[in-house]
Image 1 (cartoon, helix red, strand yellow):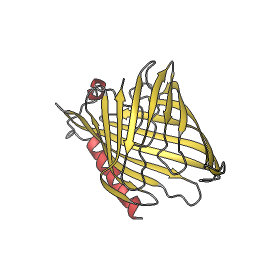
Image 2: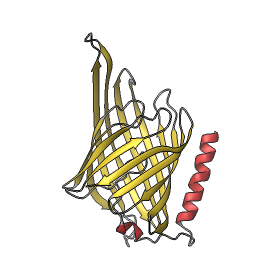
Image 3: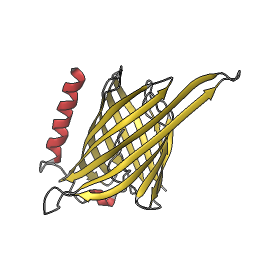
Image 4: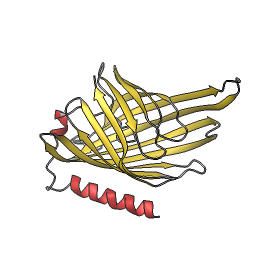
Length: 248
């Protein structure tokens, strides 16, 4: 209950910032930066441009392992190779395939950019005696929808997950929701705030709620700092989860 209340409160703060005139960030500010096509944890409906590549690193407090990945823009798609941030993804290959924009009104002022997403991961680890100590396979199929409205960006991403292995053996649904707003553009870069909810029907697994900040330092470097993560274990850390994306 405390996690739900905190997330709802944080969402209200971000939404109010995004739609108020107090915000120093204008709608076209983000055009001066080159942010990755993801939030802190979740994927957006956008894809990187063809031959646009970036590398990523992440580290964190407590049980968040260090890892990294590569994001490669392809014609109409994006290929992502990375280590997972949850309890059952040791590694993952993901393909995001861009679809035509969806418009809800005739003006087309705020189109939904969306993509179909498929991901696969497999880990088969043996010890020195040749005995299998970890065998895990995961398949994910879903989509992500992202819309820009005033200074805010909003994403919703449903998917089906098939997990077969030692860490998790289940079929379940997941739903990611994110809201982000540019706070202020300075000589040191653009600062944005965001909240995310990662909801799941998986057995014995709590929903995850995050609150963090993105520092778009320049056109190449982005740093995400996520000091609050509500999940099975509640994480309050400084800096908490840190994800770095560098455009090549």
